[in-house]
Length: 317
Image (cartoon, rainbow, N blue to C red; front, side, top):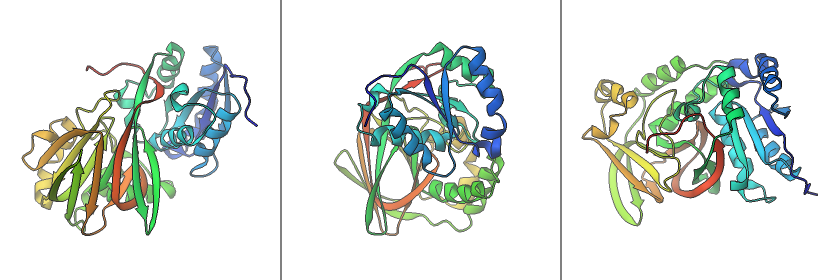
């Protein structure tokens, strides 16, 4: 039975494996900073992938409405999914904060959440909040349809291949931004551009695509800016379509993946929309917030003002 008493403490979900074990190694220091700032927390460590989804739903049922993610973007994604899968209260009545200890930390990068723990704990203490849009991706694994929520960026095609390789290495305890870049470059050898049909707000477009990124946030892959103008609270998804490009072309264009000018490239199209459907001749695989998912056909949609988040600094609108 749900607890009708709303708890004042923050429930802190800790991924001990985040950042190659930093979640576990640094937890004593992080919890000490919470105590020093008189921030009341109750904490629980995850033991397996997907468990933060379960924990988030359970603690909301126990009366918590404030959750801190101590981990990387994947841990935050699981918590967001737990918030949206529970039926105890509307998702936008739940506040989520983050202490980044992952390798990419792309969502926190957009909101000025420091990697230095004293700084990120101070962000929680200051308690500045905004209502953040949430993306929804519907996808398939074989003949089965599934749904996943995402707070930052989802991708199809080449991006998903790189994420899948990187996640396999994470599972073996090897992960950093250099590995992501290595996987990006090595994947160029085997990756093939794919014919896809996109329906954006009811308008059909066809292209041979290298990748498609859909974002509420601006950063992915440890600092790449594939949706460089995205806003977290405009009620729209930013869509970046990189059309057919050769290996040498991609290598020459790597700089624009990081400097925010990707939309200036002649083979890159940008859109803003509430809905996107993608079908493809060959299967395009998907990822969301760095979590590997299934494949096309895929549909993206948005939940405006879906969840409350704690931020450090606001983006310039």
